[in-house]
Amino acid sequence: MHSVPKYVVAVSSNLEFCIFVFNWPLPDCHYIYTEHESSLKYLDVVELLKQLKNATLCKGLSKDDEVMSVATAPTSKPGPNPTTIVRHTLHKAIQTQDPHFEVTLYYRSVSCDVLD
Image: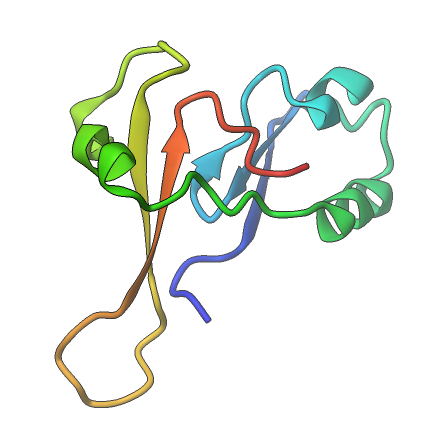
């Protein structure tokens, strides 16, 4: 279990939506956006939530030395180059009084779809 929600769906006043998966934004070209024009005018909320629930979470790139050596921190504002690799760190929920945080670490291309 992580300290951030798995999904966040932000909806604007004009019914356009934006989706984050563990705080990682879906790219603008993701099929969920393109099929429904990023708007709840063309999609029922329940159907959107079903699509999210049934999607498969990307496990990220392999954690080999080559990938880890070129990965950047997300705070460095990586460019749009799809070959740029970013560390996606998820803090786990605190379960004990241990002062150390446990994390799940993914390595992702900046163009990662996050959900399949």
